[in-house]
Image 1: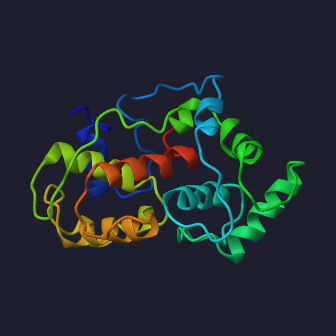
Image 2: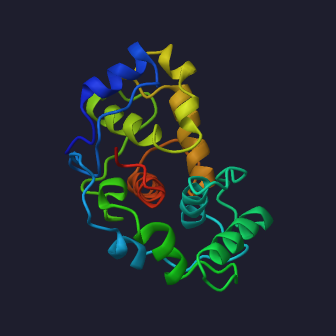
Image 3: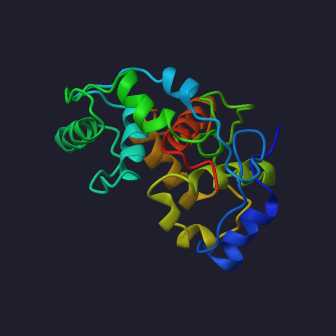
Length: 213
């Protein structure tokens, strides 16, 4: 399995906290700075239409992307309710898109397609998925999971309990984060990390543009 992050980056989390920048990484390979000029139009083109009362991973990814556009009242619930509708319509008006609240190709291109591939990774495809079961000890898989979770709101600020336990055992505190993500992404909240969970995490990170520098 290809690693998404070097062990040193994870070790830095537990020895130096989360204030320092993490090594740039993307699905499968590291991305070097400078950012580059390639945009994420292909990625945006593959995103499905999202509308009011939808729920699940695509809504979650939309909400996290909109948070970065200043709509910080969105908490990434995975439910397209009134606050998300308000944010989408406002974003559409500001970008001269019909304020229908329906997130289609024009809205995705404005929100995601204009981002550099260095930030999105440029794809919804995970280079190599992995599975991780509660209690499992696997440094490589946990490095990957840490790297992904720390790029998804709100887990960046929730590392204190995990930092006080063995970082290379998939323990209860980390499982709690995964179950929370699964609920928001519309996946069975088992705490078991499988292809669906990894794919949904990658989508949330890519759409929000959190793979990059």
